[in-house]
Image (cartoon, rainbow, N blue to C red):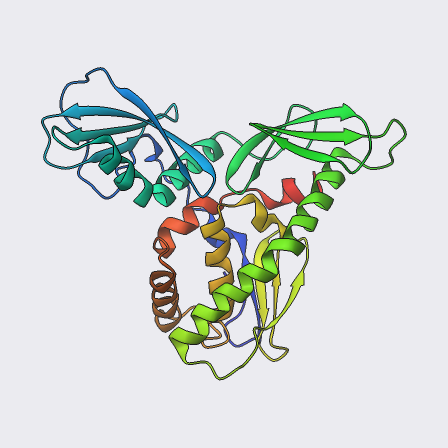
Length: 286
Ligand SMILES: [Zn+2]
């Protein structure tokens, strides 16, 4: 992710994040693969951090709860007889980060951002269709699976620049708090003596999610992080913070990342990176 091992500035490029796996169609999440003949499923919907997660539950003669995300995006769960729906909901909720990651990968496999009417853009890992309407400029509304962008009749702005302004506004609201919470975990895990988190700069970048200037005690984050699942954005922040301890990508660096992620209750690094195959250039220049 960084360029140059001895350079005090450590730039984390997007290339490291390209790891779109081919197994989206059968994403076993923590349990053994689903088996048995298909039976009528029961559709259930749970709320996870305000986001709906629908799945199809089938009761089978199995020992464990099995879970997979089908190529069409259906989340299929099979559970043993005798287990009630609320218990299954609990298991699904526990594995929600992995499910959302698998769904995001599916979307991503065939999608890249296109910032125009009818195009698509992910927000917090969820792909939305862009709908342009005439109205008061600068108004962007998230409604179901649509992102409504109001354009003035003589607006000089493009749909792309309006969406980027909106994402920058969200970043200014959310990324300082994300840095703060990641830094709290970082300082606890490393015993860091600094009293305050590093300074934060937000900047659109076409090939990096973030960068770290060790001597300046500053990190720079890409507002495009708002397009990723929140836990992938947190991973980028941890990655940059870890460079204050290890200015390289050594095994010790990755071991620290692993401790930070575990401490934050996040999936492993390789899992998180899979969500980051977004074409930043299309987002930043589109
Ligand atoms: Zn790096």
